[in-house]
Image (tube, rainbow, N blue to C red; front, side):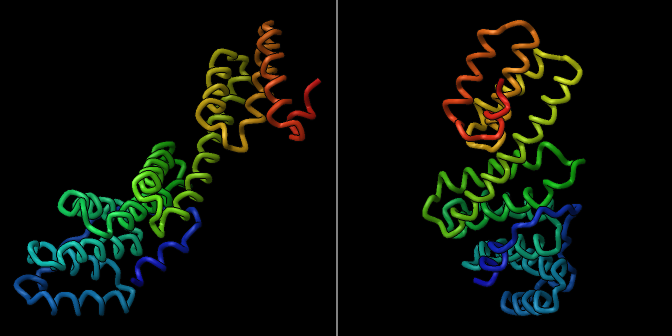
Amino acid sequence: MKKIFALVGITGLLAACGGTTDIPASALDRPLDEIYRTAYAQMDKEHYDAAAAEFLAAETQYPSSPWAADALVMAAYSQYLDKDFAGAILTVDRFMRFHPGHKDVPYMLYLRGMCYYRQVSDVRREPGMSVYALQQFEQLVERFPRSEYAKNAKNKIAILKNYIAGKVMYSARTDMHDENWPSAISRLQSVISGAQDTVMTPEAMFRLTECYTAIGLDTQAAGYADMLRLNFPDNEWTKKLK
């Protein structure tokens, strides 16, 4: 389907604001095929908000139709294209509630993840959006590992884990600058325990040696130094060890 290939290629982190889509009065009491024709005509014109409204009208007026689930899929996709991420998430939620066993569940999980992912770069929405996106992609990979969206979701998971770990590292460095050693140690240990496959792990180990040295716990500092040498012998942070 067109919606699938158009979405999978998106990788950038963009910010946008959400909204809702109202069903147009003109869509009321019309045959399903007529509503669909109008919806796709609006999509061809790139009037995605109007297309979403038409698809939602189709689902609302014909909830028992075999096309009801497809209408929600297309409505969510249209809202996504319109950057109405909040509206798309609500539509996906409705789809999941009424069609939990539908063949397009993997796609809708991916779409919901992308709605959060596209908002990650907006610092006003952090850290929630990155965590929500990660949860959606991990759920997709866990439930549908052979889905055509799984590979792309795995790539997003790697990006998000590094992004989240990077934010934790930034806070840890600030704590170290302020000599708030307990907080810094807690943050750094969370990177090692919860994000060990990220690029931040070697630095976290190095910083832990610094923190423990600063508070006079040389044994713990040496332990993290040994861990760094063992797991990342050629890493730039290993070379910084004294």
